[in-house]
Length: 383
Image (cartoon, rainbow, N blue to C red):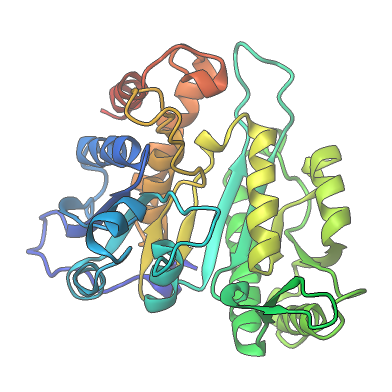
């Protein structure tokens, strides 16, 4: 899909590196540690190929801590700079409270809406460690519709007159438009993954079969909303011979969770409505060791924002213990979806080698390394 979403970057003189302006939004908690680490890795990238980029960074504000000081979690200024001055962005983590706070709304949800970042792309990939031979082979791409479902946040609370007790309601939105474009992205990425695999010797591939898209739903119960999702995503393949080489199957969301942990090798590309995709992709992180190693990219047709899957982890914030791998990989995803494949692969290979050696692992992976030590280890392998 990189050819679909690639922006027109700053004009450069022939032979010189392209200058990319990247918005950095650390936000809350450990986001303030891992996003600077990802920036260091981007700055350390050597010149690779004729169009290797250089970087300009703009620090931007958002998050719950920003809300507590300023009364808004996402300023208009941040949005305007992202829209008008940035080629892409990296977001850290947000400490959204579990209880209702008057006037507060999640900034990441707002950015996805305002920038039309309609798909959250989350690769979950295992690395065979030299110190742990029990790791299952996992190479799954989870694509989560990013703008609808219950996350439209249309909620209300009433009182049952017969009992005097509170009743809470939430509206769920599933549209044919959003379902189709997310489904199309899933099938396009299935083709792209298959093309990439052809460059890898068969014996070294995790996935050896035809590309496959698994559609997740619960239409046996939610026949209207999930029914529309299911029918629309299926129609992407059924109405376009371009995807004849891609297998298609379905999984009820509860069955999907069960099989994900029992048989992760069974899945290639998984596409799901917003909330299902959120839960499945966070759970899938357990298959590869930690939320701290799983990246994501919020993808639209005109903008991309990398975002580590993990939260703000207030219990370890400021202690130099946070795992920066997810943020670093998210920087790689950002470059990949902007069309800089060689540079992204350079980052992925360096990160995989750090994990494979197991010398510099943060506490979430059973090690004792600091955030900065892991960043330095990746940079050493990149340079």
